[in-house]
Length: 493
Image (cartoon, rainbow, N blue to C red; front, side):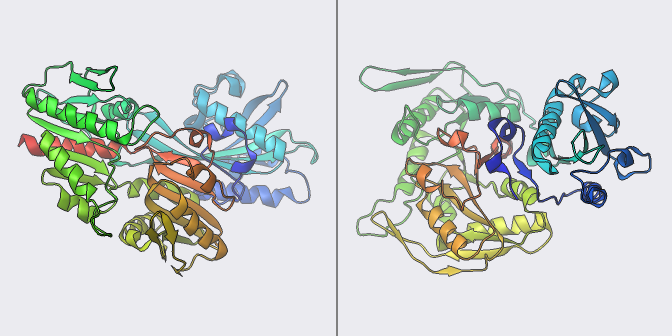
């Protein structure tokens, strides 16, 4: 059972999931928990003494901690096993003196939660102990009782697994002079993440707004003869519309080219106007094609974006080099650690997203090393009204992931989630690359049958979504970094 609904904000900042359905990805943790169950009997919790024996299950990778006065905890067994989680622990195992403070806070917080509930629990989290190194962890804590009535000690184990990511394998090799990187206003946070991955500084620029609403944007570094990366999200934010940000980026690219930039690569994590790529009504606009022409006219040599609405239309619209990235591998890694032994189905909320759902399903199947189901929902949209009730696929008693390229109003996702709930889905999770989240989405996505929402960080979350415990944000800057470096190398040849 997922425990997100029962925890406070402090715990949700430390753990991406708390789970009392104790099935770990680590066999030792499962054996440790089984030993706890075998010794518990009818008592509130088993005696700690058997777990302190050198031949006990806890001796190999398990920890035993005793409660001390003033809400302190002392590690009495498993000092060596604890190092990966909390570092060295001087002062006779005093948890307050652990070298890794954040690891100690996680352990202490989970102990207190177990102390309150009286039941074992697993907390899942991801940590980054070193640059380009990611560790996925499960922290198991169970109560122990010397008298069988009051909890005075705790059994713990940490399963720490380093994750091999694209970001970790990628190391940029710049020829001299190295390319310049600019991040326009509103995209500074993503720009800093990209700069860290590319090992480049963010170059200075000037942005000014005039009284009549006109804007000026110019580089403050010499761009003549240089390769340039320009980062700009093109979603609406509190101060600028989609049109404002698109026009500002186009003007800046043209400014770079007219001042001698050798090549300009535009990095737009979210590219707007891609949904209108064909005429479905008489005299409809083809905005996807128009946006492509705008970038080409401004002098863009390469454009990098993520999860465009229709890949074929995107590729046909651009005559300059256009790179479309996907976050399926990152999403698959996220879900693979949570699904455990449940049956899984990936659902496309409309037939147009069938290929997208199939590509993600294949990656998830590879991660899980077992079959993953596929289902589809019919959707028809006309004049803003969404209809269609046909549903194909099995979701009964299954972990369901509804996948789309973006969530805007939430109507499409909500319809699919309702259909899955009516057909007996055990858990329902929404997954989309772009968290556009227009205002009506807050109400639509608050439905009780939606267990979680997973998005990437291509668009920064605004309130009230930032404080929504069900929303997990997956970083994707490393995908853009690798694509940008490869584009640079291809152009330098």
